[in-house]
Length: 236
Image 1 (spheres, rainbow, N blue to C red):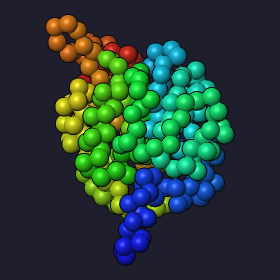
Image 2 (tube, rainbow, N blue to C red):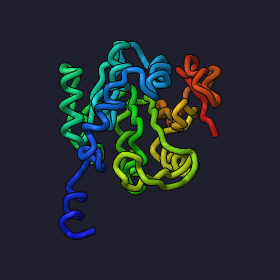
Image 3 (cartoon, rainbow, N blue to C red):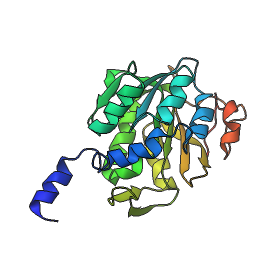
């Protein structure tokens, strides 16, 4: 890559998605029932009524933020593509929104009951993913919940839209990083688009020590048990 092209790539905080934003919007960006909507809707049932949720890499807000907003949640969005952010704002003008790379955002300076990062983690290199997980841990309230997608295996591949390299840390590495930041994987799932989901929860903190609430039949491996995931045990 020549110096000019390298400079352009380095200045693009959207990981290539600003360049393909119009194509993205014409496809997934307008599909309200797109892949992921059902699982996110099920996951949202484990959150408190009226919960505050951060959508990282929110894109146009469709379908993920839309699913949450329609269910009465207070959704905050962060995306680095100006074109995507403009589309999100047109769809949901009252939702707080920031045009920034997730690794640069201060997440509005507040804490959240839930964080969702659909199709985001693997766009970032390994070191940035680890830092992002640390930031999410800080941004989640005790007992807060995280949903993100990434392959279960450690691997890399070319993103179909941008041609850039994507990276998955793999289940074991994600588990280790999450646990180091006070979160535990309590469930996993796969959707019709072969996206792999991780459901994690931040520890509840007492005066004595951080603990996870006792299991009351929480998720085992499928999202069909999400209704029971108000107090969940770790999934090893």
